Amino acid sequence: MAKLIINSYEEFEQYVGKELATSEYHKITQEQINLFADATLDHQWIHVDVERARKESPYGATIAHGYLSVSLLAYLWFQCVEVNNITMLVNYGIENLKFGQPVVVDSEVRIVTRLKAITNLRGTAKTEVEVTLEIKGSKKHALKGVIIFLYQFK
Image (cartoon, rainbow, N blue to C red; front, side, top):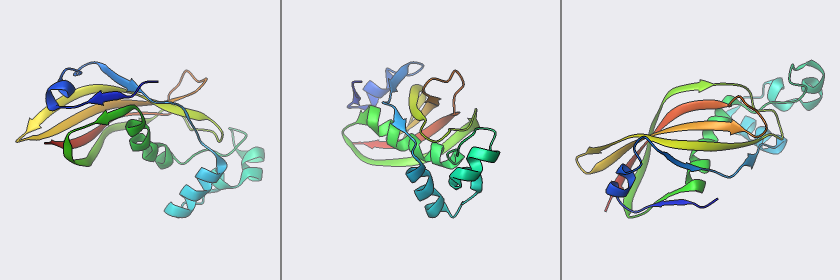
C-alpha cells in the first residue's frame, strides 16, 4: 500500500471527514507478547502461559495485552502516513478508546484511519484521527478510538 504523504497544514485539512490510509498487516507473535509482558510487568497467564491458555482459555491460545494493541497504533500510523515539514510531533492523547475483541497470538492486525478534525492552535496543528485496529479474517475489530497528535509545521 502506498504511504500517504502530507506536506502542510492545508494538505492535512483537505482530509477532514475522509479516510486517510490503511496500514499493512502486522503479525502479533508470542515473542512480542512476552517482551511486552516483561516491559510492563504484566505476566498474566492468558498472555504468557501458552500451555495453560491452550487448555483453559476460551480462545484456545494466548492473547495480546490490550495495551500492546494500543501501543501498536503509533507504529502502524507511521507506516501508512508521513507528515513532512514539521519541527515537532507530540502524541497528545487517546479518546473514546473501546476494545472490541482480544487479539489471539499469531493474528495479523492493521489500522484504518480517518481524519475526524484538525484545529490550528496558534501554529500547532491538533489532529484527531479515528483509528480502527482490524484483525485479519475477523468481522469484529480489536479496538476503536481517536488518537490525537500535535504537529508543529515549519
